[in-house]
Length: 413
Ligand code: ATP
Ligand code: MG
Image 1 (cartoon, protein in one colour):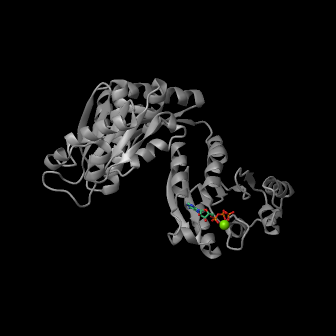
Image 2: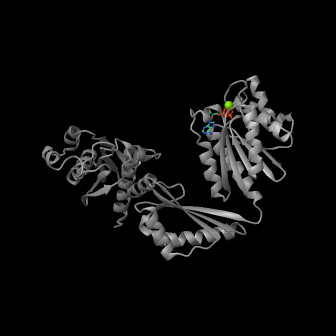
Image 3: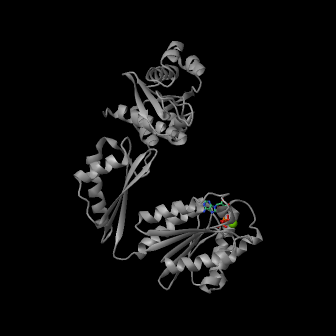
């Protein structure tokens, strides 16, 4: 089934709100094997909205909109639906009761204007919204499926995950899909593909996607089968072969992240880590502490951006800085060692490099990063040459350092 996603809102077309809704929906629908063919954004203007809906329903079997379902005058999606589908809005007592109940729980009287939200198109199916008062609207007509969702990202995501995906899957009669995501890092996409295609023959009922990002390359398996068990068996079988083939590069599955995997390994061993960051300016510490409960394995860190702080806080020798420079292997070693002593941890990671765009030289080009790791057992550093983009270099450094630690803990060489 082909899909068109239409995001609605003046703030979306003017760029005041970045359209993350269509990105989320695009990913979620692709994962269940639908083909997202078009994405459109329109402002809060009835005629334009109506035009977009008509075009969408002509060229795609599934049209999903977000935005404009609120109770205020600028929320006009329902008015566009009335015009396109020629259906009246009818008052739904049960929906109003739910909205009222939502306000009661928050201890506020429902504003009268919210009554509008119980006015819904005739003959539609409704998807309950856990986090807000605008219900999702679904109209199936002449082989076309139209779904309108609220614009608030949290509400939209819940509706897609809990309601829309199961509904669309149930329509795809005779075929089901199983998706498995394997997460790799420390190897580039083309090398990974070469490794896989030389060893594994992939069945035509399976789609294997390579999804690169600064933290690595994800492998996404989409297996199609005649029923759930069949799809599951195909996906699991390929996943097993992939795990064997990509081995040490595989750090997790599905929602695992490098920071969560490293955190888990440390907690299991009752160990702690700390960081000393220069060019990443705290980004590594931030990544680690994104994981709830990270205090169990993370003691803290130093953002030693200047040479002075490297000396004062981490005990890096001034001579070393004068001879080898701050972006050097000896400095990364000294930073890691200094941090481990300062924070009394089992492991310390250090990052020092040239993020760019300025500050590079022939000898030390932009993207050069040294990452140090210190433990009771040993202290060592690795040299990395990333690219020319500052943000990218900083992210790559964060993930490369976490991967270095993951491999050190697991004894992977
Ligand atoms: P409400 O009941 O809050 O009015 P609504 O369905 O009318 O919900 P909108 O008013 O269109 O939704 O959007 C609500 C908020 O959701 C916007 O202020 C915006 O911050 C966010 N939002 C809307 N569309 C998008 C989008 N495509 N991507 C990301 N955020 C969005
Ligand atoms: Mg609104």
